[in-house]
Length: 260
Ligand code: PEP
Image (cartoon, rainbow, N blue to C red; front, side, top):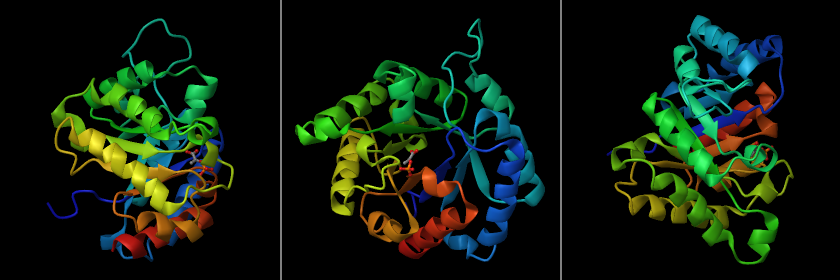
């Protein structure tokens, strides 16, 4: 199928931006993106904090911009006595199309496990929300030659819980933890090797041809071409460089050049 793996550039804002800052960003990004060839644009996904989801949605609709909106996490249950949590039902009600799940910061600081990430993935799919499932090894694990085993465990934990029919709807982001927010990007051939390994695991559960596998970890405009030029990397999950419209659009432009 042509273009079965449409490129994705997703910007994870983490715990940054007030609603005003968020909508100002969206307006500025749209101004810059409009000058690009729309046929070459990747899926552009913006991941604001919960408090800015509604204003970003409204702003995008008003502008008519082709941006998708993702939450940065969610609870797996639809509702209940879970103070402070946001459910997939609530996100779907807001029209949120995507959600980031199992980001290493959620695993590290908020006790998310392979099991909870799998439960959340199932819940997102049930509500028609595209999950970006994050996996990645710690530095110590890489240094001890455990990268592939860690990735296999994290990926299989999710794949065993979903149906083959859902494989085209999930996005997996390979984010080596040591590359997140450090300026230390994984070399493109090695990032590609791990992304290909992830695709191989997916293929054991069904058709992996449409599953998009992203790389995340210190992605900037100047390393986007090398990363996205690889055979098994379908885009980037971007943290720091997604906070300014100028640097984020720089990455989008490079992605357009590579995957055109
Ligand atoms: C991230 O937050 O997922 C990320 C990859 O961050 P950064 O681009 O800043 O490394």
